[in-house]
Length: 288
Image 1: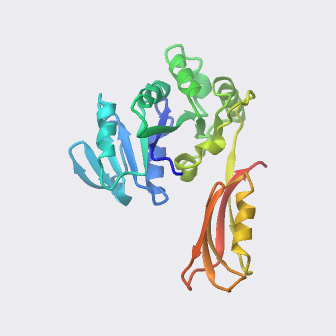
Image 2: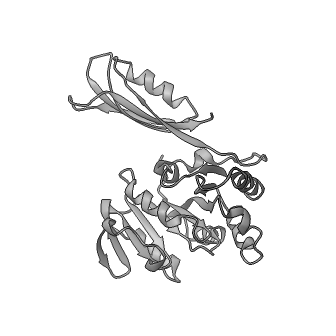
Image 3: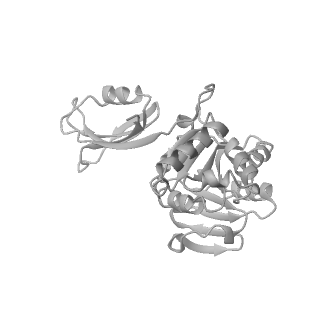
């Protein structure tokens, strides 16, 4: 049975960590989902201009059926308005301000009822500046509490950080978010499905060891020979490292093309157009 609650992901992190870049990236790579983006005020989140289709008061209509809504000081009212949208969104992204405490926001949303659930808290941290920020008396407590609330930590700008800065940043995450998954990012290379659908794959409930970096790799399987689609799908779904698979193959039973859609352990196999080209894209964890 599907969960009727609307999933909401909180995106937090200190000023300059890359929250705006991530939100714009998710909007451009929404994987067919209708996203609703909640911001404290429009000025705090400059959505890329070419994504905006229309503006109506506190609501900005974006490409792909997405919307951006300002909630000001009344988050609960904004959530109520989001629920009234037709068509309804598939997922809500709440971009917290750079000095906000996402854990407190999540607790407040938890009081909203069963119609909205917190899908996860994603905290962005600049790998180059994080060690220095934790030595700054004025902001260290805020950043520490942000990390404490994380289900997933995205270490941004890791290409700009020195090896020592990366090591120290990972040590900080180990200390403050020992159960969080960690993704190293070099720009707009975060897989959108990871944030929108697969946060659970990175959480480590019940473990007491430090966080570890998780990389994703995308492989394309040529599927040049006919296969048993059901057996093939079962093999992929049994692999815990595979998060997503999508593509076409030729069925060995009738030599007709079929389409595979796999998310985690769930999959579907349907008929494909005769012109469909064989090939399956697989997104999986990389342990190398």
